[in-house]
Length: 238
Image (cartoon, rainbow, N blue to C red; front, side, top):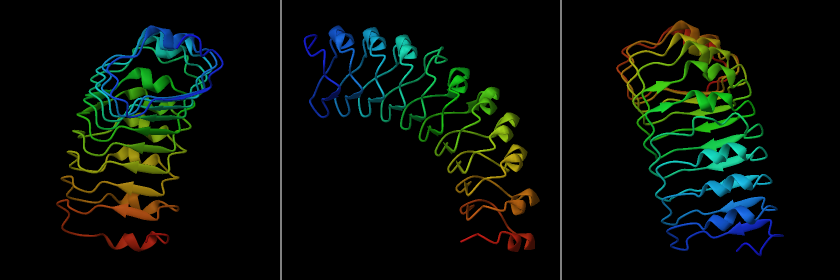
């Protein structure tokens, strides 16, 4: 494939591939690469040569890690790695200045590491259905983050710096191990959708009822015995 030097879109979805040749790195003009639904267990380090890449789709493979060279993909906007076996992420992702969408659901991650917190352009972070019990205290650095999906993990709390995410409109924490809605959530003034359903929450904090833009509050399947009268202040609630 090293002769396909002018190729900009390469879609090899659902082809039963087990490996990707090192020569993939020779496709210097490639902008979109789709390797979804294969049996790939390793991405070669040469992927880091594809500096014009805008979208990389690795969903539904058998990857246990991503190559360190992925940090060289400075023009990448969308990275999808759903349904793999990732237990960790590269330690350095600080050169991925344009990454806006990162989807990692259905993996084996145990934490959201510091490296993700260096993705200054990130707007969507999806980490549903992992084994996450810890989130980096530096997550507050993701100032442009709009959507944070953390459903079906093992979270009991959220870091205080989460309150710095002033652009966050959607926070989904369904099916975790929360016994209360963390105080840091009170700083998220632009929230429109908040989901803490299927946890072990016993009481709703009063700060919940100060949101002016909230139109969806999902708190079903908890241990709540009383709904405060202040809920009437949520004028936009469906």
